[in-house]
Amino acid sequence: MIGPGQLLGAELGGRAVVIWPGSNRGRGFSVFDAEDGSLVREFVLGADFVVGPLCRVHVDADGERPVLVVLDQFRGLRGTLFQVDLATGERVCPDTWGKRRKPWGRTWPRMSAAVSHRGPGGRRTLLLGWSDGRVERVDAVTGESAGPRMRGTGRRQVWSLTAFTTADGRTRLAGADADGLLRVWELETGRPVSGPVKAHNMPISHLVPYQVDGRALLATGGTDHSVRIWDPETATPLGTMMVQPENTLGLCAYQADGRAVLAVASDRLYRYDALTGQPVGEPVDGWADDACTGVCAVRLGDRVALFAADEDRMRRFDGATGEHRPAGTA
Image 1 (spheres, rainbow, N blue to C red):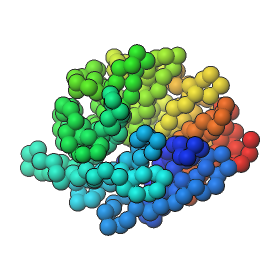
Image 2 (image 1 turned 45 degrees about the horizontal axis):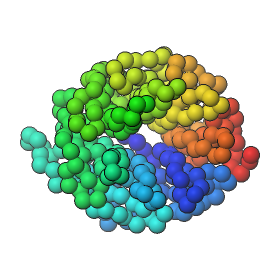
Image 3 (image 1 turned 30 degrees about the vertical axis):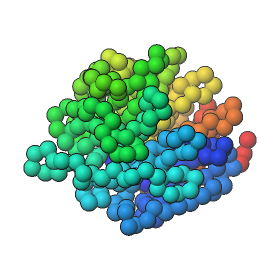
Image 4 (image 1 turned 90 degrees about the horizontal axis):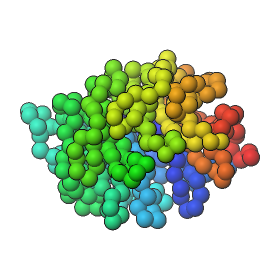
């Protein structure tokens, strides 16, 4: 489960920003300028429709408008997905309610993962994972079904989802469940591409797609304290397994000075080569309660800024060197 310390990079009004969820007991968001660190805006989601902490957050560009897609797993114990205009803080499109879905077996399923994707013709869909192992698509505007349902492995809870495009333009959906199983589907048809494969020994909390030299790769972060690199077309592991003393609390991929890097938030902030899994520089320490809970990378001109946070503060680093760069410095 992703906690309030998760960070997201986005563009708002022509400038790079960092979104820091977690205010008001996990029900609000603060948006900071990535260059000078100033507070751009802060908004709190009303308690009338948010009951539990926000567990899955994703930013999608709806035309010129960035939309924040948020899953509250605990509303009504079945989950609610809602969408927020990042510029105004207003909800857009109808909420997607877990209780609208019919149960499989004796108990009602709970929405456990969600991600947004823009398909052919600019149609934006929501990809929803459920506690009974299924994955389905709904239209982001109407909430109606938008394609064939995909079955996971067994009936174990879907922990994470991500949609991505391969180097040759094919769209894929990767999903992972509570047993640590990884699977990849064709997004348009729902047909399996690879897997299921036992990627981790415990639930997979993070899926991060990226490209290296034109090759599509996928990084997985599990609650078994490890991060792995995969070829998503063949479900083949690549490089060295990256192991931390604590769970993977944040994971992102970025390019800096011609090198692809994975940044991992755990007890400390770690950086690894995104192709080989070998460490890059020394881990960054100094987080409250020995936990770095979130990480994201934002491009600022010709350089990349790496942001990492615990529950109380956010710090900025040079993505290439790992040096601490306070907000406002060159």
